[in-house]
Image (cartoon, rainbow over all chains, first blue to last red; front, top):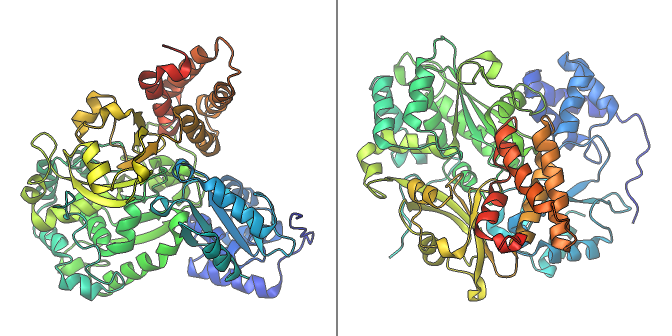
Length: 166
Length: 413
């Protein structure tokens, strides 16, 4: 039931650095692409976040101040400076999903995962977070696991989908 | 007979969105070819004749916007396509990115030619990140076939399109915040003037158009303004892509002629309310849009008719809320959204949203103070008059209309 307990301060290793280099090179080391770069970088970091040493690495490679990187990480909802999980499950709680009773979906999710919204499973596989509207109102109530959107779910279907990420 | 139509959405499900050849086979890029065979002033005349209003929410006339963008001095200009549709219940632009990506590219190229830009930027919200590869592929193919890049179709016109991603910030739908984001920064709005049409992305003159607006541009240049004008009513011609959701049987994206009533849209197109429940209210244009009571359901869906009863088309979202939810619960939910999405730059929006949320909490719990409703109205008006950007200005649209149409909820009757 606990939250993720990643305590290592140094996440960057040679393997991760080369993955980040590839992302930076695909974006031609263009610092105006920082928002998209950080999203891609976050995806290749275990537990889907931007650790400080990674932020510093990106800043140095793009030749911009570290504060500029943190300006972006801390502003945008889809970027995290704290470790999350292997897969982030976003539960939409916007008005359209509310009219379609997302609260029942939340109960099912919390039951299957054994955690509350805002927590991560002990094995670090899943984090469950609230989200603003991601434009899947036609299939509300909806969840987004990483980049994949699912809606109009029965409990059976929900279990099947979650298990497919294990 | 179906009441929906197919003009801007004419290509939906007609071709494989990964294949430029299939797009060209069904007449793709005819609009761009036609545009390149005329002067940019002629393109502007067509846009003006069609009376198309911008579809991002502010309803600024397209012809006027392009004319102004063209007349701004400068050899280096920028077109931005705003694909950051973040208004809850709005997912019409998603359908265009999914089903007709080449039409959007064609529209961006037409816009670039018209205003004299060399570069187009497509800013797609992070929530649609799964659609980025398809868009990038479409741009790559268009470049290979000579519809983008240097000397397009053998003319002097050269133009490239770049894809940028948002990262989950509603405020980035605002033009200047979006520009900050494309410059690699946090998305907080800029002070105006200078206006972005004169000094926008990288300090260049910038023309920002919505996805649907650009898709209409393609239709106008492909079929002519007359075709577009043949739909709708004489006062409000044309078609609109709507996204309808909430408590309806068939939520989804539909293209409709202007002038259908809200009742026709909700019952004939979207299949009515599940279980035939009564409608408590509806909201047009997303969370920042206005709400109306069921007594207004026979209002025609047109700019003027809606305006007369205090409603707006906005983004084209139509949210239907049935009797299971009361107006105060509804307001409470969208207030949570604005508290989360306010960027915090200006005090009226940052603090106003918080204080209004507190008061709504008390009204729901029936623990309100005597002065609460007065304070609520005062703050809502203050926010709309003194906020830094459109987010704060429109955040209380629903609340102000609720006070007008549901006064009993606030003990005002």
